[in-house]
Length: 335
Ligand code: FE2
Image (tube, rainbow, N blue to C red; front, side):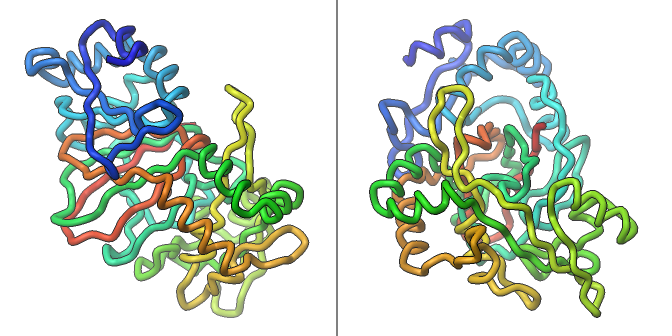
């Protein structure tokens, strides 16, 4: 039993899974998986909520140390239970402004995850890392897993940074000094055929062009309207690496690989969707190394119905594997 888990009153224990579902990084299991010690520990949702409320500060501390916690075999069955689960930890919802993926509100502050086609991989990213305002933590909940595949992969940002520094020191130096900009053309209204098809209205939670433009401006993003009603957006210079204020460690924190590989649809050319602030595009060979590094660091946990995954969005990147439908994994983003 890990020492931190003892602080939780003997109600939960850690679960070990074989690689690649769970790995050991810097001596710690990744992700950390917690389950009730026995069937009688949590009989229903109210008892779980009470335990979460009592232990919220300890759980938040544990999250800072491990980066990801998976709660398995707790009595969380529906989206509404999931909403109550997160709220018991006293989190506030993050307004989903600036993200690319089309999402639908489910109940309370629960949203669908990226609704892009199941046969497409969602590459590694931090949620909304392309914006200066990004969620601090994110939660996923598995209502039911895919028939096949559909893992949510997670990778520790500091480990990715360390490995990239070793493998591509020039690129990392450039990235740290210059930062990056992201370019994306948003459709007029949502385009559900595209993994990055959120229209400008839902991206900026706005009804009018003026409102969208003013919200984008607050984030440092510029707009250029196109004749067909779509809009070309270019972000402010965003950091590619951020420092974790809790431990001073450098985090690989950006949406580079996601933009470079996946900002593709009838409006967008992926290779031109992200560039260093001096205008230099990403080199394909460096992107291949980044891909390899991310996969090497990643844990690919198979979902089980009722799993709740709590992710520190600064310390951990996530991705979604291809899958055979149906699969329903929901999300909750925290300020
Ligand atoms: Fe995501």
